[in-house]
Image (cartoon, rainbow, N blue to C red):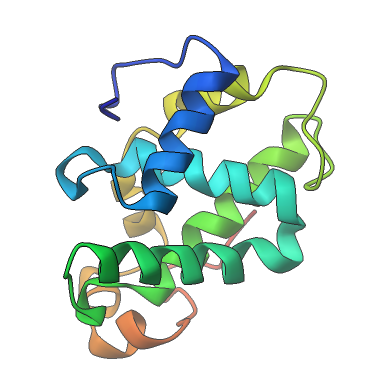
Length: 151
């Protein structure tokens, strides 16, 4: 399954397939774009809650990069935390409690999340390009320099 922005999930099984492909490393990096990242983040947010989701995502991304022979320099801590916070806030706004899915099916939430945050450049509303591309932001969480997070 590819994770292009224009494709929507047709059921919860498709979401699970994406997550399994990511966790097993069977999903090629070329097919794991922004929408795929958002979907996995949603999966972890709903299953682990806001307190643990970022840690789980960090560990899973590290394992995924290792499986594909990509170095740790590909991982970006500030982007990971930014998007995990954004996804966790979405879960709360969508009627979920950050632990269990809302009354809507998972695939519907994943589709809505992808539509709402299709543009990965949202981060630049909060961060200057220089800061987000810095080594410090890649290694550790760095607070935004343009405006505080409002979610």
